[in-house]
Image (cartoon, rainbow, N blue to C red; front, side, top):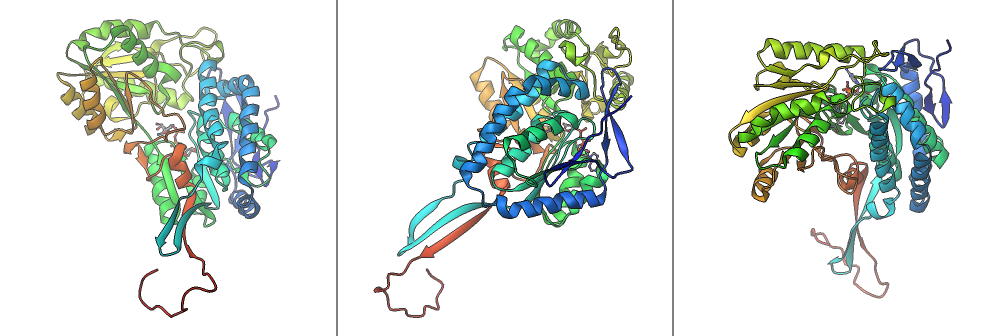
Length: 497
Ligand code: NAD
């Protein structure tokens, strides 16, 4: 059977890689090979960067309105192709069609934001900072920027990156996840159709070697990474050492704190969705719930809710689809076995789930442990599967201390009806994204995504106002205009304006 190949995009052309190393893109619900993706050669990485460097010369001078209109057109094209994009995303990534549309939609919001670049990239102006002297700032693009993305949001995360980088006047080299590059490539095709000129957006495929080449490349000025903490830390160090500006959004272990005064029905529904949706493969998945006081009696109801979730191929729109790969399934089931061995109570075991007609799929059903303690491996690792760890605490203070003692600080949520408790939580918790009765508090692009401690390296986050600063260099200009008839022209050797 003919298996299509995933192309590179270099200088506006979709080209077949000359690589001798390829890997399969596999439907995780069926194991069908959907395509083959190359691990690009060093020459191909160089060619992509060179094309971006050439294109920067004219792109940086392209008027704001021209740049903005491309993203207006682009958002329209994404909307028109939403269903086909979602179907492709589900086929290669596994998540449900509804969730795939959500993945695309959250990226589309960033594209809409990029269309407002005229307002976002404004400088500042101060008149008369000294006599007849004015100072103003301009936010200039950096040059060639690069992005490295993970498998779990193959639409949203590439769209966090290249639209804002390009809208601010940079050119871009994208390295999508090699596990599910197809929907990313379709989005890239639509971006060219929207009017992004040749060389402004380039794509190379690959894994560690290609990423290292991007970290080291002297012509890349800034690098955005989203993925695991292990890889992100390596990327941050390597690319920083090569003199680049770097932002790395990384792994997580997101805790919910449930106070006994919370709305019980709402809380249990939200918790179930946030723990098991997308098979737990979200960086903002709630994978730990700390039940405070009487809330610990809610466990049987939570288990019943989780047991009722439907597992199946994403195209049938069940509650959760398969894990991305056989290796991921093995890892997750191995960690569940370890949790049992370490003495946690397995309230619900998803290892035995069966999906008729899809026996080969990488399915794991909702799994719940209670009695989890901080030293257990199921707590220490980001499981990245549909596994919820339940812990207990007597007070809110104790629960907050537990969250803050975990190395990760990506997302968290408090469930309560108490404003005072919510305020204390918001003030004391050391986590980037904080939800109050909101289980997955991913900020809309009016704000920026962030993270604390092991979940983020670099000062500025993706999208929103912060990313405009990330992708630009602030230049200050201090100017004085002489009136021909005024002043003596005397030489001034002191430090003053
Ligand atoms: P990953 O770190 O394995 O891969 C991310 C990217 O790095 C991929 O493009 C991959 O090709 C590349 N890569 C893999 N191994 C490498 C190596 N040794 N050297 C250099 N590059 C390498 O992550 P993943 O499994 O694709 O994605 C899941 C992870 O991403 C989870 O930890 C999740 O929490 C995290 N994530 C974080 C956020 C966030 O915003 N904080 C968002 C989504 C996902």
